[in-house]
Image (cartoon, rainbow, N blue to C red; front, side, top):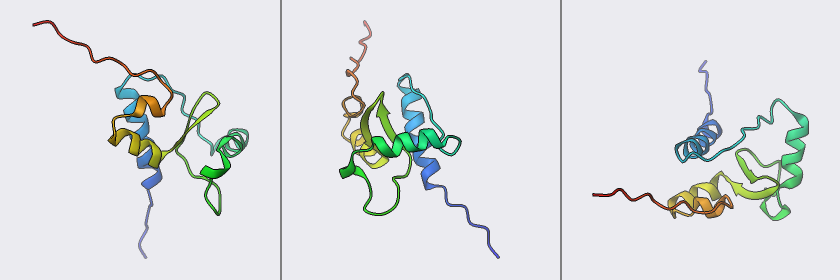
Length: 100
């Protein structure tokens, strides 16, 4: 017998959280396994065209207040194209310049 642990979702969640922390973006982590109310809110507020054909959408799902931003794949694409602030509905931060 082999014990197998599938961790892709946890890694995705950690990836999002690490990015937000590294960029000093305030956020609230919501554990839907602990709150049926929060889980149902998440399901209700994902646009129908963004829901999977079968089953429920899996976390991480990202919102800015009540505005749906996207899922992990959308987050990852925005990270790769350097558009995460736009994806999150935030104003881009200007890079600070250091004086010589």
